[in-house]
Image (cartoon, rainbow, N blue to C red; front, top):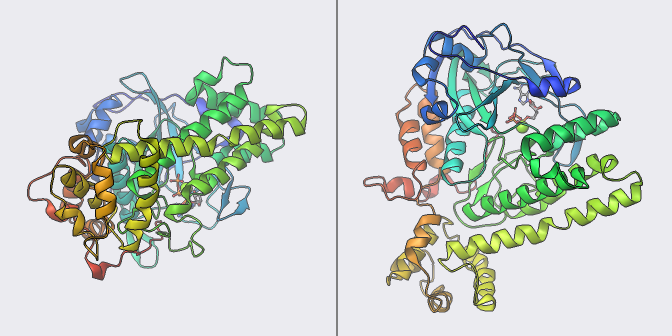
Length: 487
Ligand SMILES: Nc1ncnc2c1ncn2[C@@H]1O[C@H](COP(=O)(O)OP(=O)(O)OP(=O)(O)O)[C@@H](O)[C@H]1O
Ligand SMILES: [Mg+2]
């Protein structure tokens, strides 16, 4: 990409080249009055982009898609998807564009993508736009997830467009510049499979292997190995979500990546009071995507991926099904192992030893937390304080203060390491009331609360003086179960 005075960006268009049937040329909508609201300068540097250059008129043009260099080929990616169990054969990027791929300073290939950049041929009835609030939510929560070490798509910038978008109320519009190892989704494979073109399906699988799971390339059954790699990546990812209390909100197959990155921060939130039934999407009336259901939904989504891959697994359909079922069967043990290892770390315990007593402790804890609506985040920090000899903060999490004592006594005999606990249990997560407060201020033109919240959640483990309110649970009048539409 040329023509940007402060820097040069070289974009490849490998997705469009290798999978032209799944790439529809698109053009970003005009942006009357672009204004950079937030820019991740460290991420820009990682991409080899000069942050000051990105703030110039031409740089901002790149961030919203209106600076289109001669050789650029922005495309909307086709995908299908199961949403709340129902199948849509043609979703695709209705309001997003893949600008192309670039190689970052570490030599990794990253997608540069825009969300909210205008209508595409996949827009159906939608306006192609996004509002400042939801795009800043994605920026804040994806930054928090990254700081927590959880695989995620990244947010490079949110730029206000100066356009009004109509939601329940008129909202200021914005474009999110997103960076990811890749934007392939389970729904991408559903789309390819539904075309009944075996060559397309194979090219998509080869593309996915080459970009995301190269270890699958050299084995006897590369497509089975691809599926196994996605199963492994998702089992590890969902365990990380569960360990920090992250609720995705809309785990449709079009919102589950092949790379193993978290994608689409729509109505997502971090659970406060521990309750497996916690839901944050205002359209999820049945609790399909509740906190406690996430491992099951992930497995369900992966079954849809397996179905899509069947023709590549074996010429004989029954044998293909048997291979897929066996590979899918590895999701649960992998998830359980990741969960147990993560819980051991949260409890300050070594990776193995005392299996029976640890299993009992881990098994009993959710019941204890749920009974008293204990805050899922502050509890583990209080537990570290107990490991240092002061059980007071743990007791004060419970209605009946003696309730956790038997559990804590048994846990303490294992000699938990409080410093290790504080390195894995965050003090600061983007709590809903803080996010909502920051988004409301930003929508009214004050970015201060967003900037402060970003500072706090991007250093999640270190106690920050004077930032106590960022570690505290929501005030009762906020309502623990507030839900979001997230568009
Ligand atoms: N305002 C809109 N205009 C056009 N299409 C839209 C709009 N909002 C959502 N869509 C489309 O509806 C489908 C489901 O939307 P969903 O909210 O899961 O995705 P998204 O948030 O737009 O993007 P992503 O999954 O890339 O983060 C997608 O095909 C999306 O492109
Ligand atoms: Mg989506």
